[in-house]
Length: 289
Image (cartoon, rainbow, N blue to C red; front, side):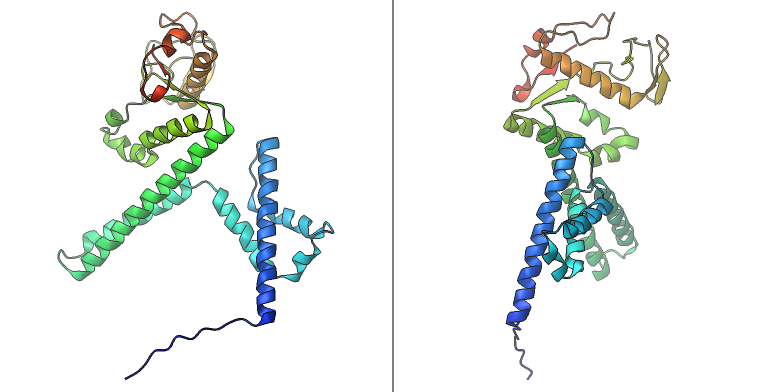
């Protein structure tokens, strides 16, 4: 009969000293680069790449006050930069990768014989992939909503009919992956908690087909039209960008209390004061046009 024994290996005093020194340097590099990254974003509104953090680390070592960084291996210091870059990288790429993995596991499960052990194993992998996709989506939404609430005093969104939109087979998956309903819920409680302002624009507001430059409202604009030229002023519009500009303008009008929110010459003009007096859910003003 064979007996298993647990063996514990303790570092020597010299090894422990090296580890402690390395951990201290890693913590210093993380905090220093993080402070520099955040300062750049606040001052210039720019993001920082991994290559830029690498150059900053080199300058940090050469500034005369951090010579001790040369006493430890550069590998953990570089890995610290990689971890921080991953933490700040857009998580939407991560979500798409996990979604592809889920699709691959589902195809593999479909090829397994029903009732077999291999199918049960494949089914477990599919369940795990579903969990990873759900966690990645939640992480993306939380990061994005937190960043918006932290950086903006006013956030304006459109009151989209998500339930109706997911009935479109071509759009259902993309809309579900985006998690618009959950994103709005997060914005609602985070703006309230942070003392920010969230304005919700009514879904019937013609934001896509109203010219954000002159206010001209075409008689018709099909959903398939992604770019259009205003017949009034000749401005070339991207449909989504134009809608975003109009939604922001309407939200600012509501926030200003009393400004008009409809395009010039439109019969939909109303007072923002009256609009905010409408009863709304969770205390968030909804623009009624």
